Image (tube, rainbow, N blue to C red; front, side, top):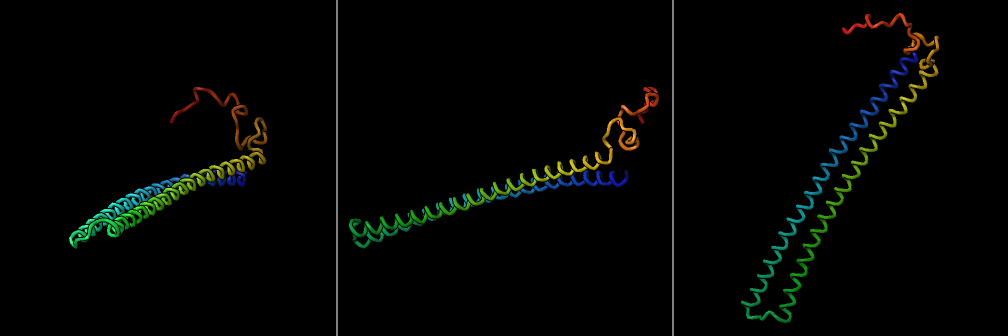
Length: 178
C-alpha cells in the first residue's frame, strides 16, 4: 500500500506542477506579447514622426530651390520646373519608404506578439494535457492496487467508501465539529 500511495501522490504533485507550469508560461507569454505590441505601436509612431520631419525638410528645400531660381532671374518653367518636380518626387519617395519601413517593423512586432501568445496557450494546453496524463496514470496505479474496488473487503484499509462502513459506526449524535 505504501508504494502505490507514494506513486499516486507523486502523480498528483506532477499534475499540479504541470498545470502551474502551463499557467506560468501562459502569463509570461502574455506579458511578452504586450511588450511586443507596445514596440509595434512605438515603431509605427516613430516612423510617422520621421516621415513628417522628412516631408518638412523636402518642402523647405523645394522652397529654397524655387527662391534661388527666381532670385537669379530664372523662370520656373522648363528645366528649372523639372528640377523642382524631381525634388518633390524624390522627397515623397523617401517619405513613403520611411512609412513602409515603420509599417513593416510594426507588423513584425505584432506577428511576434501573436506567436508569443500562441506559444503561451500551447504551454498551458500542454500542461493541462500532462496533468490529465498524470491523473490517468495515478488512477491506473490505484486501480491495479485495488484501491478503487467498491465493496471489496480487501480494499478495506485503503480507500473506504460509505457502503463498507458499519451502520453502527455512523450516528448523528457522534458527529463532532471541532
